[in-house]
Length: 335
Image (cartoon, rainbow, N blue to C red; front, side):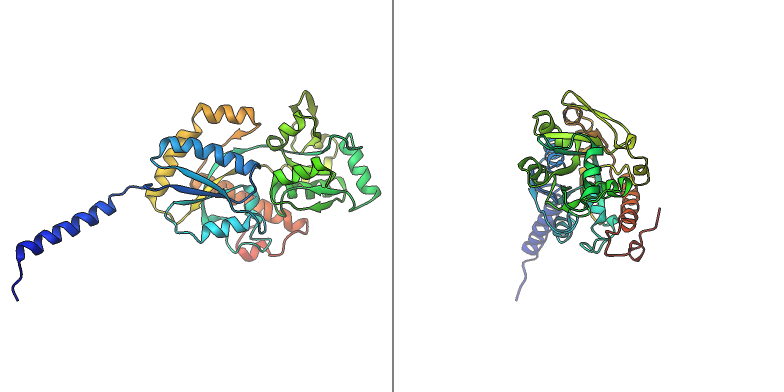
């Protein structure tokens, strides 16, 4: 059998050329999906849809946002993205509340599995339906003391920052609510408006429209500072209960993440788009209009922030009796 050396050489060049062309496809060359771990309409969902729309302007592909809710502290969404390839085509939309998933038995990983991007956050407050008999935080706390564990309160899912803030109020003010978990801030707020629960703890950004529309009555900010909303001043709970200082403030850190094992190319491409998006007037105006503070950290800087949050949240939950897994067994050091 005779071989045509010229034809073999041409074939080799063609194959090599095809391989080079395939490898030359720079990330990203197809659409990206962001799976938000909390429900549609909540703070994490809204901020991810906003930042992804802005990042699209600096990428050659589209970013589709979906919701992958459920589990413990958003664990379903994290597990979903964890099980996807680390190629940067599936992002997870998350918040500071997700750092508690491991100590609550919903996720078997430290948070350093992720390479996070922080967009920002909004302070929490405690509110009641507009027709509620409680006009002050003192009224509400007194009612819980009269009938402990009978006043239903929504604060997103178990282990969320809103849940932690509710637990902090209980401990700092010596109150006891009946915690009713919901799959995100929006459903919890809707439950309060509908009268299914008598109390709701979520962020100012999430409650603003309902407060301004006269559907919710804010009782207190769960930070050291008061806030102006709907033509009224919402006092700080710290002014009422000194004991809250031992548990609060616990603040939001909302954004998205990819696998930390993703390539440097993927991290660099997303980082460049993120930097341009964060610096835009669109993001600044959106944050101001929606009661958010802009972050902008990503990579190692953001990982350091989440590591601190993970430790603080884990041991706060343990102290409040809300953990099922010892943080130390996960390698989470006590702050």
